[in-house]
Image 1: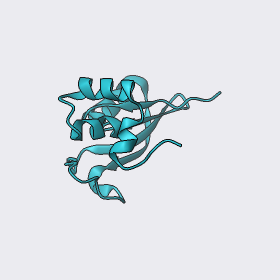
Image 2 (image 1 turned 60 degrees about the vertical axis):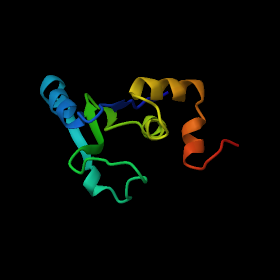
Image 3 (image 1 turned 30 degrees about the horizontal axis):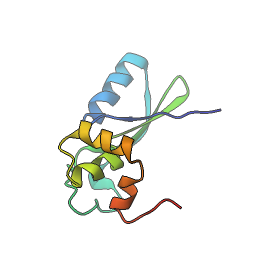
Length: 107
């Protein structure tokens, strides 16, 4: 089995990438800022234009992906969760909730 981890850095993705490059010799394959996204942000989401939306890098041949924030957590925050911890709990207890917030349902 092959696993590609996806890390979330709460707005500090660029700083994390620089650290991994320096400390581990990471090679950045892709880095997309919010302003470069082909899709507009969801209504009510004010994503900083210069922050990294998605990145991909390798360390010793292993690919790691990184992002500003998990969309599910962001949706729970927009729906009223007081903070990231509350949003994580909401997603953990009701994993389908973020999908319902954008009008989708599990089959």
